Length: 440
Image (tube, rainbow, N blue to C red; front, side):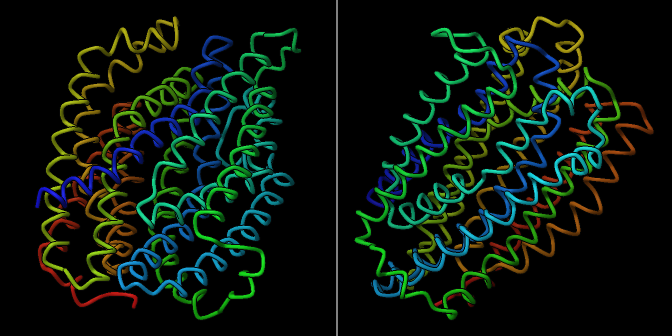
């Protein structure tokens, strides 16, 4: 048992550090732009959810890849792993190409539909075109990372993200503050810096993955539609769940965008804080998913059952602790990002509800990851879609707009959604119905 726990942490800790760096990279634009202009923060934050949809779509192939490969590795079927690598790289390449063209050509229509104010659209136009249009670099990095993680080899992506992080900070400093005599380009410069660092990261991750897996160009001939079907059988239901969440958040973002620039900016900073709180839970969820997938592949399902419950307890207590700490230091934390008193006061009303939402979120992150890894895909999708559409979106409008609770109402609605789905997922895991599922 000690060996299993050590194995889980040997997987989880590098993932945690990688996610920490990814989160910093993802939010460094917001953090550094906060020193430049709160309107610039509002522009980037106001379009963040629609950009995140790209990652969601790309991640459903990555999730199918990780789960399928973990089970093949557990069963010691190494020929099939190369087939999965070929399929996942080709699929995500073409998906990213399509998404990039869509975001580049229809940027204005998209931003109008999410009700981003005209002045913020003008500020963020080039950023949106760059980051959204060149998502192909992100696709390569995400796919290569998911392949490496399925082997339990989580350290390479950690080191890659250290480099990306430093490169992105350097680029942002040049284009926001004029370091080394560079032109001050504001939000556009942040977009250029983000894309260049992602480009370098994609090359590094692809090179490390192909060397580690001994995968060469000629291995692309191993592409089979059988593996496409298997990845999609995992990915499509998962994508339905994740896309429903993303589109629900877009609806909620549109509601927030009608509240004004202060609320848009405040929501951006609150989302940033939340992203740091949930890093350990997401890392633990990914580590648990890898272990559960390998244990199910090796037909050790009772060990998989116990591992998920242990991970859930650990993540719940860590989220509770971190949320309380963040709440206790809410004013000093916000003053790191902005000096605008109106924005700080808007966030202060929401901070008590961070504890409510982040503790509920642990159930969904950890247990859903375990259900997916075990092959139980449809239940999380159906339950997730029903609750997110039936609770999160309408309750956000009711509490946020109708009852005039503004951002606090949005957080209460999302927290209610997380807890309802969380209890449903825990019930599903305890029924052990997932033990009859599987992909190999």
